[in-house]
Image 1 (cartoon, helix red, strand yellow):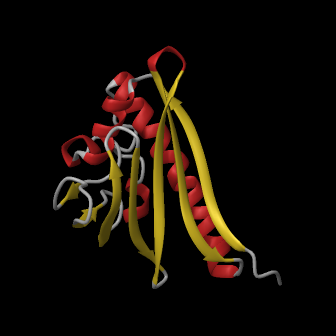
Image 2 (spheres, rainbow, N blue to C red):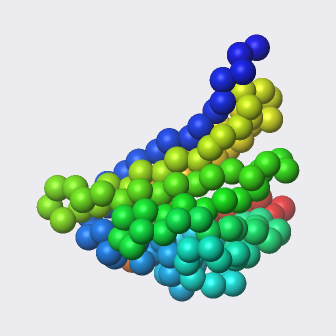
Image 3 (cartoon, rainbow, N blue to C red):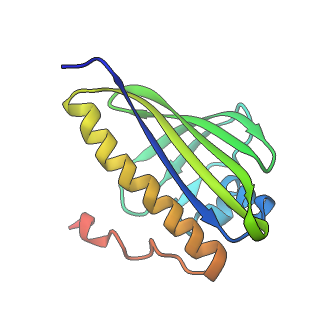
Length: 151
């Protein structure tokens, strides 16, 4: 088996200016419309937060790394006892749109790593689709989407 590290990379264009997209990601009041159910605070450099998700019954500790207003957000969270880095980069795109690029790294190329790669690749793609639906159309795509998981 190869020892290559696994990393997730996803991207999507959102038809809103960078400052609106940035605020939707760092402001917990906005995040509850497409991602989390609650947060202990706004994402700010060096802060430790707890996120709760509507479909999962656990608290997710988040350690905010670097923040560059309207351009870059990084934070760390845990998976299988390993702290993983999430980086969200915003760049200007056509017609005052924003390209949102997300990476999460890294896990070993083994069974646990492949499970993480599959689950979180889906998760980040879902995050981007939900963010787009919320910002462009005011729709919360997550509402009711994962109720089947609570059975």
